[in-house]
Amino acid sequence: MATKKTSMFTLTERITLTANSTNVFATIDLGSYVDVGDRQSLQVHSVDFIYQGTTGSEVLQTTCSADSETKVQVTDLNRGDFVFANDRALVASGQLNFDHTNNTMSHSADLYPDNYGKGSDDGRFIVNDALYLVAKSTGIDTGNSKAINVTVRVNASIVSLGAKDFMAIAIQSTAADN
Image (cartoon, rainbow, N blue to C red; front, top):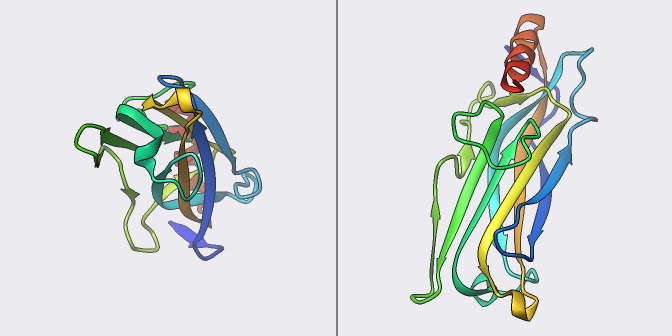
């Protein structure tokens, strides 16, 4: 199905949340990795989410003044908001919950961590020119200028697909856009 052109590499993007219950957006540009003419695609092997406080060294608990929920999603089409799990554009999603009273954290899983397998043919093939990130949090201590930073790490490689495989993925992506 796919012929690897590169070894695995990591793409990262950080979203900084400073207001409660407000969607924050970011993109990872894939224009230099995806080439329609050469049937070149990005193969996503896994997606990880890292949650940090206002600074890289600050513990996350000090950024929250109440119970907190932080959600993040990665899609290969720009939906402009969070999507349901059956949306074909969804690449990965995660959620971190902080219980301020008991000072405990937990993560909920729907696609977190998003791991597509260990084999060379395992992965999610992306033929679009960007990945779109959306994140939202509640419970941020906004009165003390605190923030929650969510770093998205996409482990991927560049592959060449056969004509039929590339066309099938492109059609599926186009159908997901409707």
